[in-house]
Length: 310
Image 1 (cartoon, rainbow, N blue to C red):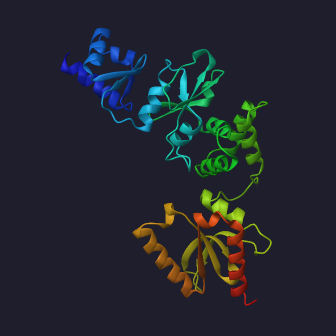
Image 2: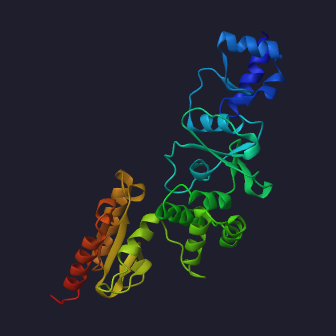
Image 3: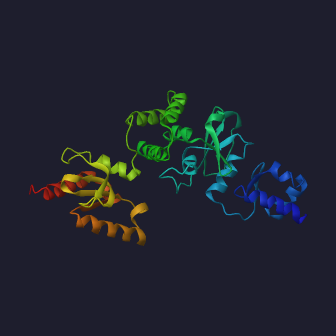
């Protein structure tokens, strides 16, 4: 087999997560040579018409692309897989290979592939990320609520809002797809209804969870994204939440933003400068969020102590 043909197929596959279609391979190799390459073991065909480079690492993207090209373009990544491709918070470690196909092109996928069979998706609901056909962000959120709980959907929605996603687009998509027995769209519409017409987008999902926990009558109103300054107006820190009259700051202590040598050193320096201005910093971690009533009680005690009520 000519080295140039092998190099061409390998190079083509390298740009597609080591997965190409048989028709793409046929642009460089005859069907006989493809069959020979499969027998010799340097190509594999996990599904009819799907050609992979043997020995390639079975990454999430590799497995997902193989599934989406298995039915001549009649499948796309969706639901949880689409949430990961779109980079939504909470889905970066998702390994679920989940695809949607139309009912006319059902397919028996390998174990581990979750498939949904729907009427053909409209072009407006499809896009491509990294060479993989995938539902759009709006369609992904409309579908996601059918396979995850409301809090996970809310986390994904918060992430989409932070990326600048149009709420009008999300609502229009959910309303178009909404129908009886479709929990995903109804859940998304309820979450959209709960968003104020104007309002600050939470800096993180953890920050939003903390705000929910602290919505308690025992505590004064919290000021989100509060800036602490020195008496002469020099900026010291921006904190997730603050109770300014008692100089108490509350931070959502996630590993993503507050762990590691650089982050810890930065936080320590910031906390010292805030302390010099009379502020106390409280960090609330994921473990504490499992017991929100206890967290609220403890913060209420701190507020009372700092206000001189005790």
